[in-house]
Image (tube, rainbow over all chains, first blue to last red; front, top):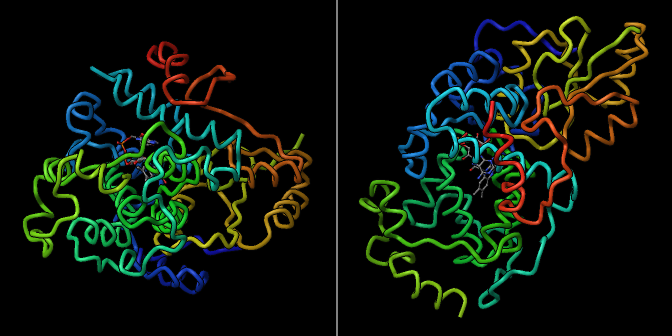
Length: 255
Length: 123
Ligand SMILES: Cc1cc2nc3c(=O)[nH]c(=O)nc-3n(C[C@H](O)[C@H](O)[C@H](O)COP(=O)(O)OP(=O)(O)OC[C@H]3O[C@@H](n4cnc5c(N)ncnc54)[C@H](O)[C@@H]3O)c2cc1C
């Protein structure tokens, strides 16, 4: 039987470090995001589907941050759907909830098959060949302020905005030519919402092993949706691997 | 019939408020921050928290309560599903996204969305 009474969060964390010593292999960070129905309810009460639809692609946008609570069934998919429908302009948000439902249904069909390529990658070119994540990536030492920033945020908070997840996945798979599985495992370890369904199948969508074309991005796109936050002080500002047109990047990666 | 609830990671909510409930931590390679999050969810619930082998501990808990019926939240997770089968636990899908089960064509999201869109956009 494990303990249920704690004087403070610090006391809880100390207890869990002792009970789960193997977890320290992934660092000792604890997220500012609290578990439990109360914290979930506070976020749920603030959901604004109309603002969500207009701003969700921006890192500063009105995203819900409900994922860890949905992932663990603290909130049900039924209640968040009904919550959205009670407000103006719910379509976009409900469609995003539907993505979660869709990936979970696929998971129900293929189970551990989420770890294997669903289809052949669509553009071979310089296809991903390496299995291991190169050490500079999880160490946040690529020198790219964006990617290093995402890794640092992921490891300390257990959260990343959807767009950051897409950029990171594309960078690792297409630019660094790493098989998606190692990056997926890295995400699953650190995300509070880590889910083999949404996570692995989204990585496969970026890789084009579950989708019709590989997902790529360029600097202009990243700069726009991050309001330039990363590029401004980036040491590789002058030699940015993303600083080209989509055509040029396509040529370079998949020729 | 006396019932207990086996609570697992995909269903951290009170499924049957009157029935005694147990949650069992297994070694899943989680980071400390994920474990803290899960634990904080559990502390708000009326549930016994344990660590070790799921099947052994859930069976013992059921026996201690003289329960013949084990109920758990529905999940698509293959591991939990196999454990539930092993325990003879009933899986309950208490508040799904879509009431009708399908089956849907899952080849692409667009096909699934075409089929469910109308249903999920009405209250
Ligand atoms: C590479 C990659 C890995 C991902 N890994 C995970 C994961 O492990 N767990 C996870 O829950 N989501 C994952 N996602 C999907 C999505 O990025 C997150 O659900 C979302 O960013 C969580 O933040 P939020 O709750 O603020 O989302 P919001 O934008 O506010 O969305 C509301 C809810 O809708 C669902 N949702 C939104 N977008 C998606 C999506 N594209 N796919 C599935 N569900 C979605 C989530 O449950 C989310 O909480 C991943 C996406 C990518 C590209």
